[in-house]
Image (cartoon, rainbow, N blue to C red):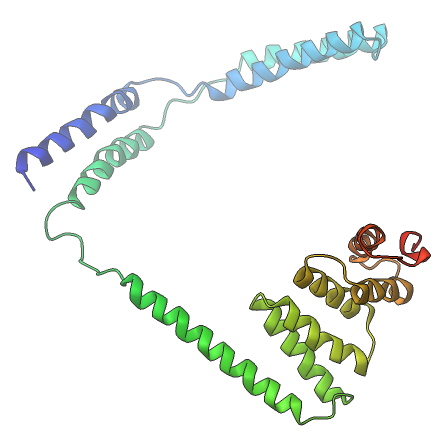
Length: 253
C-alpha cells in the first residue's frame, strides 16, 4: 500500500475528529442536570395550564399545583453545576485518536490474516450430501414402518415422525399420507387439522377428505385450539370450491 495513501487516510481521520477533540479540551461545566430539571418543570407548567383550560383541573387545584411547580423550578435554577470531569475528556480524546489509527493499521500489508473463503461449489456439495443423508434416513424409517403393524403405538409414533420429516423437506403430500396412517391408529384433533392443511397445501385447494378432517377436528377439538380459525376459513373455502359441500361446512362453530 502506498505510504502517502496511508498518511492521507490518517490526516483525513484526524481532521474529521478535530472538532470533537477541540470541544472535549475546552473547560466548562456540566449543564445537563440544571437545564434538564428546568425543562421538565416548564413542561409541567404547560401541562397544568392545558388541564385548566380544558376543564380537567379546578381553579383551587390549579393554583396549588402551579405554586408547587414554580417552587421546584426556582429550586432547579439554583442547582450547582459540577465541573466537567477532565479524565473523561482525556479518555474521549485518546479514543478519538486511537480508533481511526487502529482502523488504518488493519489495512496495512501483512496485518490481516489471509483466510480463504470456502468455494461455492464445495458448499453446494455439502448441502447435497446433507440432503442425501436425510433421504436415506427417511427411506430407512419408511422401510421399518412397512413391516410394522400400522395400528400399534410404536408405528403411530413412527408415522408422526415421518410426517414431520417430510413436512420439513417441503413434501406436504408425503406428510399428509404419513399422518393419515397415524390418524387411523388414533384420532387427534390437532393432528387432523395439520393433516388437512397439508393435503390442502399439496392439492392447492381444500380437498373433500381435507374438508372432512377439518369438520371432525372442529367437532372433537378443544374450543381454545389455535387452529380453529384456520379450519373455519378452510371450510368456507370448501363451501365455494367443493361440489355439493355438506350444509354444516359453513355453520361449524
